[in-house]
Image 1 (cartoon, chains in turn blue, red):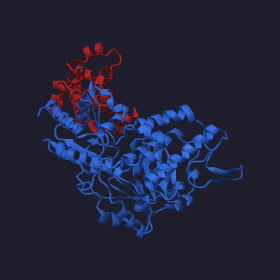
Image 2 (tube, chains in turn brown, purple):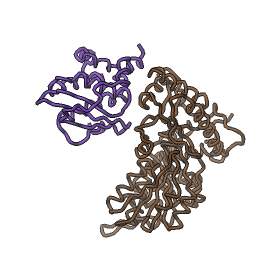
Image 3 (cartoon, one colour):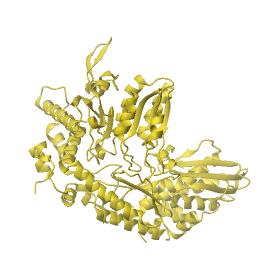
Image 4 (tube, chains in turn brown, green):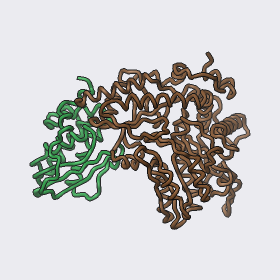
Length: 426
Length: 152
């Protein structure tokens, strides 16, 4: 069997998806951390919505970069700088293919989805949102798609409008559409809710928004690992995601933007690499994406992200999605049928996330007891306090899935929950 | 005893299910709110102060078993204590749950509160055990602003 590392040596064409179903055991073998023990048990990692683990191919690519290629990009005439620049450019083209952008200059490297959203709020937002204008978000958003817009609205004396969700955790589209008004200048919406797993109907949202001439930013942090992203098909104006949730390293993320918008936007941060010429009287800026990438970027991170996306594409995103959907369906049935458990977020279309509460065991206590079993879950408000408020709960326990998870791990989760029930006297 | 059993001792589980002094005392003259923004735990501590002395103390709110039991047992340990005595107990308790300052020796002075020694093996849970105490401190100081575990 060829390993991912072998295929990496052979170049990106070796990552073309093979037909048939995924060999999960072989996939697990590619993730070194999965063989680690936690509290004397084999690690069961179900906190993938917080960050995913990294395949050996990504870890090796980063090591190789620092051992063989490290140099600054766009600067030297020497061989190492040329190689580093080529590898960085290639990573950008990989991202372009991954989201199906029409050109690679629409891909801006940032630190993560959070920085991508802040970039748009601070550039497009500050240039286009004025006093009395409105920014529309939804009640499903992560704090990273709330606070940057709040800060913008505060500065500009604009208003933040919030579209409601129903008891299943689905966006109420009719209410959403009514909130798009003559003063709406920007719409920012999650592709997938990090707290509930709800998949939003982005295409319909974009059509509604564009009918009124309003651009749409999509926070894709929780979508990119689980569903195929095609920015041209979605027709969204901006799309943000983080590398570390799609099997890539931390510290790197992506902002996609339509070129026309990017070209018209003011720059984000000032510095080297983003200028055409500098005098003390006037500086002229480069074209996108360089205009938004001041300073030496996270070169190793971009290369690692490129390999991670090639890895995911190689597995076949539709096969990954099918496997994860099976896990979610299985977990919904298995965990949902434990007495005392209530699932939070029961939208018809969900991915990646099972959020729940237990009537006798607080999420924090459950998290600690599961950790004792080697099971990593998230307990808390998941940086989505308004979502928790909507369901009148302070916190949930969240199990979130990746391609390397198995039904057996969900069985272990169910046993762990039952053990917690015993500790708390049921 | 396993680390988990040490953390969730019977007395802690019992207090979390049936917290003592879970009320606002009639003579309350000091109140403070405390939040843990990382997990959404939220408590209000009520004090009926007679000069420098705690005449009555109660609490309300929601949180995990550790935070609730800690709040409950805190109220039991403080009745009749002066402000300075309460602060000294908190210092010892803090040392106990963080495993600093010779926790074992301190535990002896803390009476029943010594059951929280298991928390020191779970650094992520120290904030749960101390939330009510930070809130108490804020009430004793008569501060108006809610305390948060993230502003220490």
